[in-house]
Length: 285
Length: 261
Ligand SMILES: Nc1ncnc2c1ncn2[C@@H]1O[C@H](COP(=O)(O)OP(=O)(O)OP(=O)(O)O)[C@@H](O)[C@H]1O
Ligand SMILES: [Mg+2]
Image 1: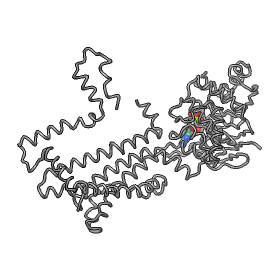
Image 2: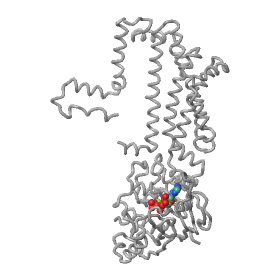
Image 3: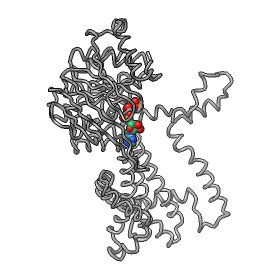
Image 4: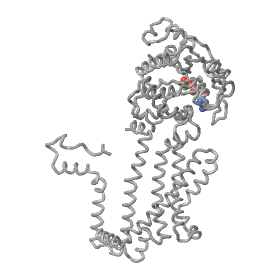
């Protein structure tokens, strides 16, 4: 990332670089600017379109209205409670998803007969879109948290399992051999070599799974919902509150961006670096 | 009793695509005594790695026996320590973590492990690097670590498959010299695979020359060069050149890359 920022201008040609450009270079180097900068023109265009009044106000709400409805919903306590509901469901779904997906993934990855047996099933069930389960789930569990959790678990488990299988396959055979001739039994090989060796792929499986799970959650809330961000958006549509629909979309984006950029991506990067893919990365540089 | 005994070993690979059997090892018999350094030399593709992998327990053999102190070999085990050409270090473990791995598997208490590790790292010249990760070491240092990791485990026999092949010529010389000194100090039993004739003669007590695939033992040569061996002095010894010339002829002029250095 840092290689993409141009070197500090003054050290190179101090006379010729105009002040505005020097200022711009320094500004662009700031992480907050780099992260939020691209949103500025987007906001401006959005604001201009909304303010111009060419589009009917029933179809579009400007940044100002969205901000107002945000503060209003926060004041009334709806936003925090909906947000809490959504995040709680995500946490449940992801928690159960990991609980099921991790052991299952390793079993399928390590046992050749388990893989032969389950692989076609895995691909088949992975192909059924998560949302496609909702009708039958509603029949079984009603409009309940169970249905929503099921959908998230479902979306998390498959990318996670496929990630684990890929990760285990990519652990060098030689490391397993080395461990075994240093006296490691099967169990030690698993915990000392297979798990750490596959961790980068598992981490990216978790990240992908969570991303899918988040999307599935919103979709499920729209259909099943009695609360949550997805429900809020759909309910607002019914009431004709376009600004709340827009608000919901923004909250989704911001939340995922924060979760991904602050937790998941660094976690994935850290495992990849520590877990010895550094050499390949250096070679590729 | 010999430390390692290989009796009438045969190996046929089965080609996954065509299903035909490929004879890799025709019939190989030799043994290694306690504290002896034996190199196996042979043309590329003759089955040196295959023999070593069978002894290590990584692959099965078709016929014959592999005995370590009279016990027949089944699967890998800590009695046979392997130094890999590609080092095969655990990238997520530090130098110390790599060296103490085997002792940890044996259940040696931590304090004792650390003492043994310090000792062995000193021996291979890696003191002060305990907290580094493998990728922070040079290729030569990585192989020193690979060696230390096995030495500290005190296996009954050490198996080394072209451990210096991927290391630059200059560093390789140094590693060969250091390996000789370590060997002379500790006297482990070593089964060493190489296709560098000079390396084999310099390091070994005996050299086993294999024929083309399917390999058989073409000749076993006792290397009666005095120890301690020092590279510069040992190569000056007229017997050194006699041995290497003899082996080159045995190998049919030798391979071009066997002449390096
Ligand atoms: N898994 C395998 N399946 C089929 N054939 C194999 C397999 N492994 C090795 N062979 C064949 O067996 C023969 C011996 O291979 P091996 O790797 O033991 O030779 P080598 O003497 O170590 O060669 P090099 O000097 O190049 O390292 C080769 O002809 C090789 O093609
Ligand atoms: Mg080989």
